[in-house]
Image (cartoon, rainbow, N blue to C red):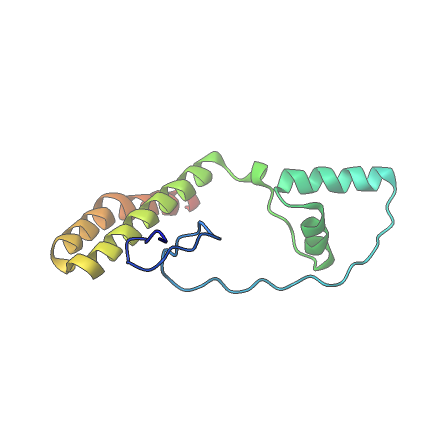
Length: 134
């Protein structure tokens, strides 16, 4: 007898992926053209080093360069900005969880919790970001 998941429908044994809801992701554009580029060893090493410092692949770095874009080097981002980014991500997770709860349980209790997250976490973090750029 097939095992059922919580919704009562048969589980899909070919995939362990659980649908968390929301909009399905947009399909990524397929890269179909390959262009050989001839580089000296020194050029190749320099590009590899810059790509690694930027936290992107060699190909991605080359695409940025071909379009005249600059790959943002992670090493050049101040630690305070990275900390604030992580804090905003955590706050976003809290807001998403509370919003889900509000949709399922009603807005009464979740609304108060959302207000608390905004007042105690989001607004002070946004103020820190504003202060960092002034």
